[in-house]
Picture 1 (cartoon, helix red, strand yellow):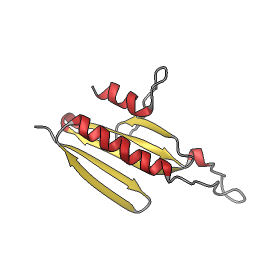
Picture 2 (cartoon, one colour; picture 1 turned 135 degrees about the horizontal axis):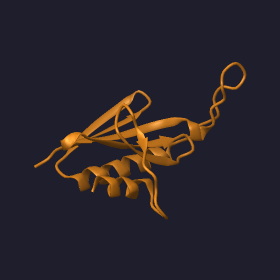
Picture 3 (cartoon, helix red, strand yellow; picture 1 turned 135 degrees about the vertical axis):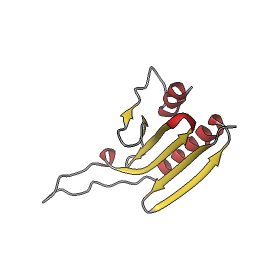
Picture 4 (cartoon, rainbow, N blue to C red; picture 1 turned 120 degrees about the vertical axis):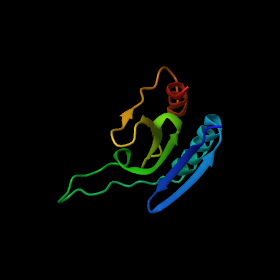
Length: 112
């Protein structure tokens, strides 16, 4: 059976978990992203001498999924608690949401 790895990064903390199936890995990814989004409290940074970054521009957590067949995808959790899904690792491509899809639904659709 294929093995999937979910890596969660939030600040200096890194957690890795392994799962046998894609559905289990995506469920864990969504759960972890929900936890990070609930605790997101980004404040505007910078301003006077450096560029000002609003909370929506800050990534407070990143959850990555790695699997067989060079599957690389994940979700970024922003400082305002919003999330967006992406494909790739080094060169990430944002996944467009269709209709009333959540970022997690869009990720499932692309990976299925």
